[in-house]
Length: 277
Image (cartoon, rainbow, N blue to C red; front, top):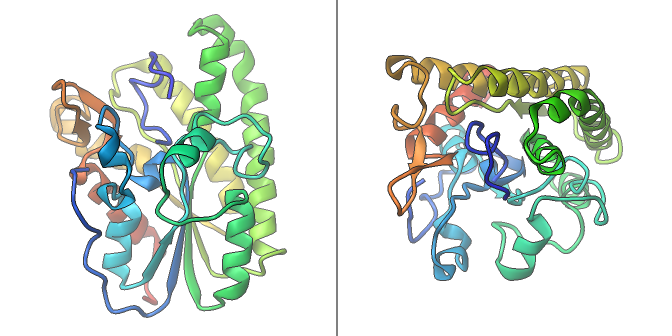
């Protein structure tokens, strides 16, 4: 991922090192997690041997599966954009490179959308699908603009229209082509520092796009933005100081969630799903 002002200020698509997955709960149905590095549980600056084992990375889906007692299939990919989720030729932010070097939590050879459709067709007992996408789209725009705020402000509306169109395609195909009519939860992104007004406004605009498309397709919104704002209120909106972000080997905070941060996201999703699990 490109490290930059937005990258260091927003939770993005890419906590603690473990040697195995969380203990499996008694399964009462299937849960399919889709998205980018947030769902994957990715963190940066680790040695290659850590990335070689996907069980070293656990995100909110593993925690949510335990809470709901569902059998998890996590198909997320670090660096996935809303376009590359659909098309193997669309621009991504490192997903295809990651897949060429390391294993994902779930192996597949086609796009994440193609896998999701096939999975849902063959697993009619799936009770939940979660999705987080869009931050890497913003990363690519940021790189193209060389971090110039004037360029970002000018180009952001078009980018958000593209994200909206891609999310519409994804969620329409999940509902129609895959025939999935169960619970769908869209997770919104959060800021790592809520005092950074320009970035907070960018994240907010992206989150509104995610929310609109998710609601349009009968999904529910898990408000990661507000959840992290509340959890970091005691540190004046600094998610790093609040312990919500992973600490890198050099002592700085990663943009990716810590174990505590993933717990916040998992419980936020759980809260919006209601009963029935």
